Image 1: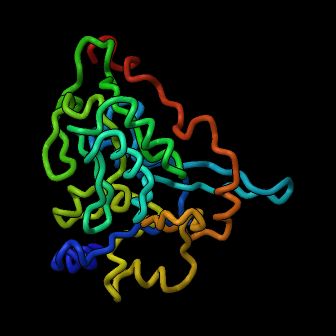
Image 2 (image 1 turned 60 degrees about the vertical axis):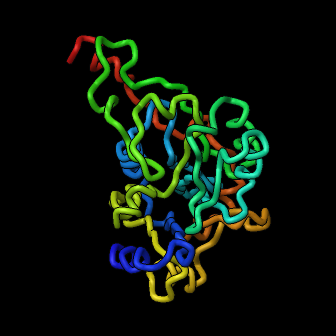
Length: 260
């Protein structure tokens, strides 16, 4: 996939068609992709560009448990972009290579966030950054919380995106540097595939040509750039979403309350 990526970067951005293919048959539900995403983008509490749904299908004794990673679908006909720009012009846009971007300087406040969230038919794609830190209420913020993060082609301090809408962008900063998205390079089960579907010999093109990869709810006409390989994809989509897609963890103040 890295070689495919390097070849794609040698072509004009408008000639690339970035897609992600997730083989849920290989996903073990470890959430390593989620952790990698949080670390790469220095995400605050309540903001995670990826979630891993656990879905139980069938009835006893024929029961199957499936893990389904999900993130922004990077739709070619993204309803969130239209909804956000109706509230604040220029808040969101589609890059020539297909990635849906947010302008942190413009897409600020709950009104535009809620408009875009309502427009997204997939859920768990957009998050509101309320400015909190993982170690709020402890003697001091940790150094990792203060470091700048690179998104959308520039470096951002922790304070700058506070009050803005945030979401997955396929780790665009890594792509521009010739690196795969953090979730893809971290997955121990090799469930994540990424590349340029406009390149006839790329891995993702071969997977799509095999006919097993499918988009979620194609009847919506949004034309997402994320595909799934799973025989149960229709049943997974129909299953009710859990109250929370994030696993419980000990609050950071447990470790940091005494300055450790």
